[in-house]
Image (cartoon, rainbow, N blue to C red; front, side, top):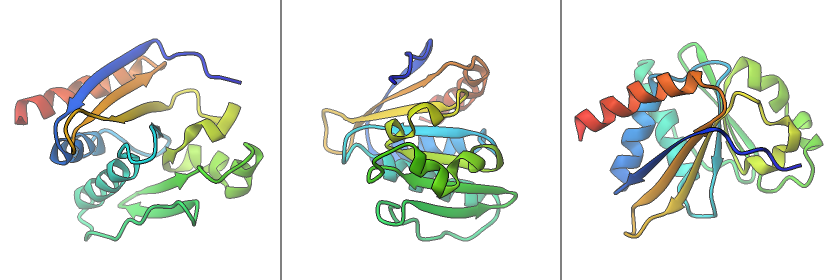
Length: 171
């Protein structure tokens, strides 16, 4: 069943991979246990690159060394620690039915970890209601991306406004 459109959306043009990393760095400061980011976009849109940057930023903020962050395409889920926050990075591309999400333990992780979900359409009705959706698409230039942050929970508005204002001030 298709999800209804989220009532709030923020459109961003990310001119380079560095700007994508800057977005991930700013978002790392506002995310924690119980948050879910649904990463949408075609193959090559930058979903995994964003997740890598976010995981790296969260580990850095927790005073932890960098860690290799492979794509979870074949393992389906990779788990990382960032201080007190456990991060689940999932790539659901190969799943054929939402019931497989339960077999992976994602339904429980939604409440106990920060979850980064690539190919969230595979979740079906199991997608958390309060999730933040980040849709990425290739931009006009090679490393550029068009990004849309959308959400139904108005609490995301205040959280994102602060992070995006800081990012704009740094530009």
